[in-house]
Length: 342
Image (cartoon, rainbow, N blue to C red; front, top):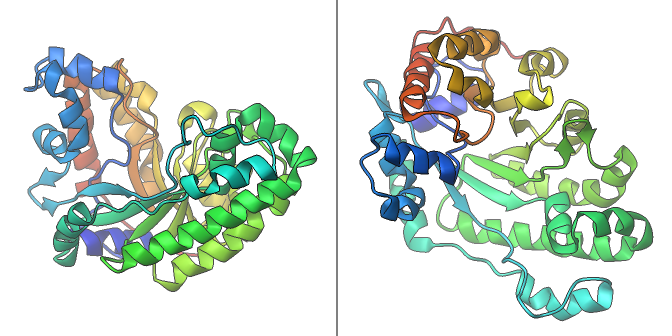
């Protein structure tokens, strides 16, 4: 069974030879700096290069290559360009229209995408695309405080921006589909914190849901699984996402109170990636093994790929990260896997 097949079968709650051994999130810059001083065979001067080609690090750490094949997870990011410098702040429709032409540009590295298409074609990789979500993009363009006021004071502005963003996302996907069809699309939102969603259900229904209901069917029509990326406590958010067709979520931060066992009980068919508490990695093998035992029941059921619940923090030594990789392989390979979709 190759990497692509294995990924899809797990996401479909079907039998597999083993769980995929892949990491959703990578590492903080300070984490890599520490590892360079602890024996990683790269100098500090090479740090940016390392971050730009993570496969080099994955392979060195034994993260994706094992005796049962190659599991590779790569991000190909398409999305709106960053804020145009010196072009004015977005405060109303008029100021937004002045900068709109600079905000939406389809940027696909075709050479890079075609390189990964070759691996994808033979089943050696999983292709993921990341899109800017309708809360994420508004917050980035207006700022958090101003966005909170704008939900009440400037509804027309928010609808115009999200209408344009939705159209852009669909057009960007059409361009990428000329090269390849990804396996998974992640819509970045980060709309929860440790106490739950940052906006009300009413705001979600009015300002985000209409655009999800246009974007998500297009994604699913092409056989792609739609996920949302949101930090924080997502328990209350998941039912909202399901209403607009989203089928999975990550990274499932334990520190924010997320419990993947409760999510599976309440939403049996909802897919998940992440969920392993990164905060225990600094405490050594026994602590990490206890964490794997905690998430093991969900690992056995399908629809879930274990991974860190966010980027590995700098408190984790290189030695202990290698222990984590070893344990991840152990639990993914030696698994009593009993997929069951309800």
